[in-house]
Figure 1 (cartoon, one colour):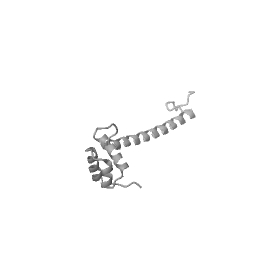
Figure 2 (cartoon, one colour):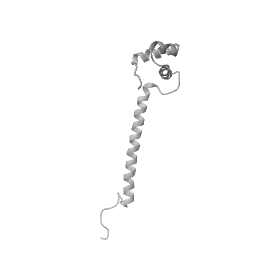
Figure 3 (cartoon, helix red, strand yellow):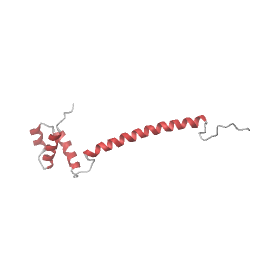
Length: 102
């Protein structure tokens, strides 16, 4: 199970990594794994504008947008299925309800 580290610790270690401190040294002194520190460093570089990628504060908005797209796609699927029912039944929604033959 992944360990959760305090945000303050992460912020401090990211600042030290961006300042040039070695990941190996930070891992030994902080108890955070080198792999975790490498991930944090990669994201810190993106957030600082030194590497391409989605900034950490933009990810939430992106996730919301993707969820909304899925919702809209499922709604569209339902509307298409309902529309197909009208086509199959030969019901003309704009047709007259009066009987012809008067």
